Length: 366
Image 1 (cartoon, rainbow, N blue to C red):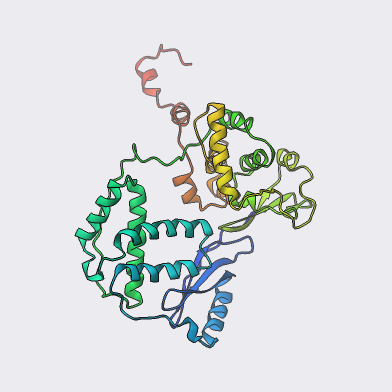
Image 2 (image 1 turned 90 degrees about the vertical axis):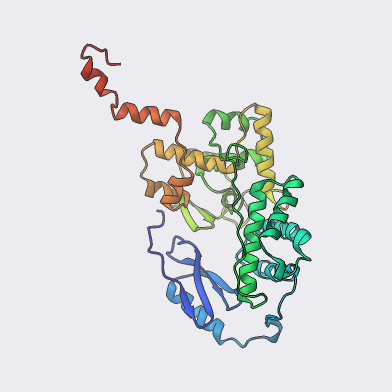
């Protein structure tokens, strides 16, 4: 029903063209490849086997090069020029999601505002420490500043590859982030939390959350559902995510939930009158938590809850990962939340208190 495990193919180098895997495999055993030229510009992406990707790469190399796409290699004198060159690559990348590009654009604006006039020759540890001090004075979180410095390092590396700047390392700053102060909302809700929050939602928002709970899918996979994604004969629902399409088994509860929404047409299952439904769903769910008086959780918290429920039900990690579209190691490391009840149950099942009974045979076992 779900995709089997496939061995990840090696990257392909065809002259100055480098083809590597971005994600996958999908249900057909194909991987999502990205081909980049010598200037790290993306020239092709697509789902393919290794042989198919090699043929696509050869076809790209056979195309005549357009003078309009010629990369300027004139040396950069300021960091503003380096950052602009970096952004031209990010903006033209066909693989990156719009939300990711927005994140990079936000970083670019801060970097450009404070570093645009800094000479390339003046980019040293003192310049980075000055940037850090200014951002902290403005009230920026260390986690945000770290992301900006990561993008700055990426821009610097691309500048070297494009021969815009001299080949020398950019000094690094280690930012110690206190996890007790800078906390991401990785909370896994309880069924009661979800039920109470759902009571505060209605319409498409309520149905979206119910689908997230029932499938453990990513919010983008649920938003992208089409009315012909249900295979009634096989009893599966096709989910299309960043790891490729996968088939989710339709339970009786899920069948009742989706009702007659899957009529075989190509229309979307869920309809939102906003440009970015993800943001709307996240904000409205947080507000529903506040109205219901439950600790806040995000749509991704519902995915964590699905992983937890499968783990507590004894589902093998490889099977659970196939259901959710995870790598088993990633799922166990980042999605499995160990609770006090888990620890107590394991201690009881392993009978770790046997020594007490040995020393005191008359002790009552409960």
